Length: 251
Image (cartoon, rainbow, N blue to C red; front, side, top):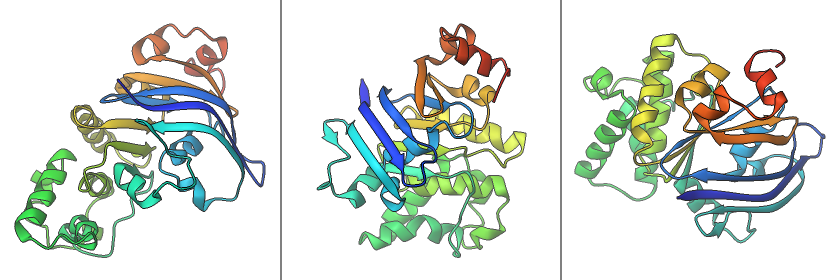
């Protein structure tokens, strides 16, 4: 089942930096899709298209269609706030709120009007369990989130995106600053999360993409060069440029 369908997407910034040219791609539901390639290829720009974060950038041109289920998310009339509840984002650098661990998770729910302690407590426990963090912090929920390690903060940011029960999770190099143990925990969490969510990941390395991707797409200088089933693409790429990048001949 297709969750997101991209048709002839073009994106150009005013400063002529990273852009996208005629992108056509389908993102499968309940799977991990990795967008990989060298820096400046357009991966992060595409990620930001999915929840309209590019609205905040100096964009000269954007055209084409991007459907979330049957809704064109590029429609100017779209409720962007509602879209961002459906499509959560976790960035490379964890940014926790200057609050307790618990408050980091309940804040958005309270803003949405949820005041019932039972519902809030359940949301905290469920989202922390999904992010593989509950056992580590369940006795520290009222401590400042900033006291957590970098790996724990990143998983807290993941939990914070899950607490709103989105349909899609976007991850932009979420383990780039983490140690191997923390990276392993995040990757293990993603394998569990894909049962309930559609996950789109910009990995911090080809090796990570090969480990976690059900599907993968290789981007180079704003173009989608090759796409396919993860294991097949990394073992037997069809395009010489994809092979060269995977083999480390450039990048």
